[in-house]
Image 1 (cartoon, rainbow, N blue to C red):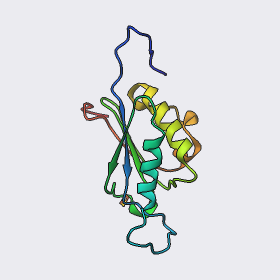
Image 2: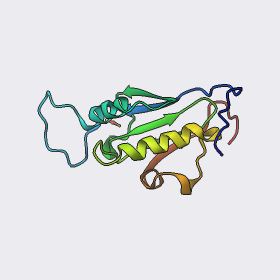
Image 3: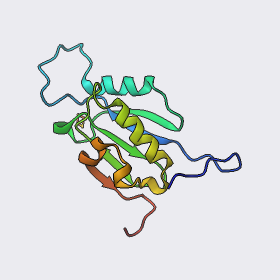
Length: 135
Ligand code: FES
């Protein structure tokens, strides 16, 4: 359920969109030492498409190396989700759409049918909120 965003409401904490900058695509040819990796290209593309309430955070390795590119979504009091098999060319809009829905969903729980198709098929992990004693 989307959170209310009226002027009297408290502004929700921004969502962290962590992007692995060291991911390579599984079928990538050996690259020149100076060529940016696909993960770095994805992070740059996401940073260039700044979205309200989303904070792009480059990270090195989310331990999903064979299924990169990889991102994670987190926010206080919410489930954390890790997604893989992403490419900068094909999935930029799906990532933004999925991150916006996650941002607006209470507890980060976006109904499965409302998630972008790539998110439905490529969720690597979901991790309970730090604050949840038993889930
Ligand atoms: S290099 Fe991206 S998850 Fe390991």
